Image (cartoon, rainbow, N blue to C red; front, side, top):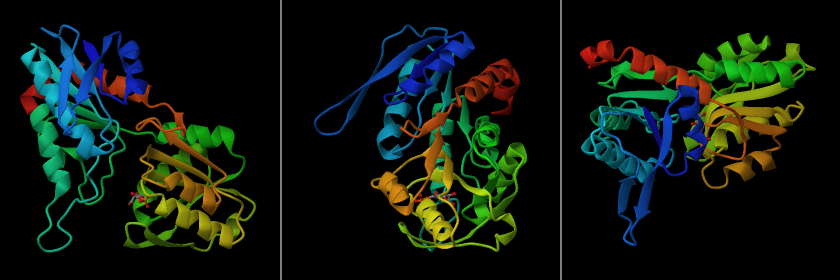
Length: 301
Ligand code: R5P
């Protein structure tokens, strides 16, 4: 087996050690006009190839990944799997307005054509209930809740786990159980990409606890910042913020700092200075399972 990491995903190379596999990298050259050329150095004939590439900024990262998968097959790989710790485009999971497409489905179809299987971390599933509803190859999600729960349990005294919106209930409840702490969710309304209003439920009975905001994604930071501000305005201590995927689109770091976050902690699904929770072990476990169950998986696809 050989694990090849895409540019910007060096932090995922350690998956190879966990798997007892060889590690290498996919070289990508960008021409002045923006086109990208992919080159893979290591010999791949007969190898099970695992491509590791987080798909943040997908319009830049997807094409080289698809080209890398095709190149690996041309070089004789016996299988090509994809470890994509962050899966983008899942928010558009239905046609909200007349004329809109369902990007989640289109994106999953592209990956399904390129890879024999896909492994990811905490995909943003809402109206799509499972990855199997949109992927046509085996697709497995691993969950960072145990890492987050343990971090909170050991690092925060008397935590109160808070999700910024109703959608976050699914991971907030399990993280709170693992952290042995109470939880609640806030109410969010979004009027635009960076225009978010968050309101608090009645939290009086939790007075004296340290608020810990938990979300799956920090993108513009508008959601987290609004939740921090709502808590601060209501007289709560500066909250600790945890998220799985640290997208941090332009200005998000600043937005959280300005709003008054005590600390920001994320998983290393997307490389960022806030990464403190390591998902590589979870991913390596999923890859092993995937390759062990390969004959059955192939029959399914
Ligand atoms: C939305 O439902 C997600 O769980 C996140 O709350 C959202 O993606 C965060 O986006 P932003 O940082 O742009 O507010």
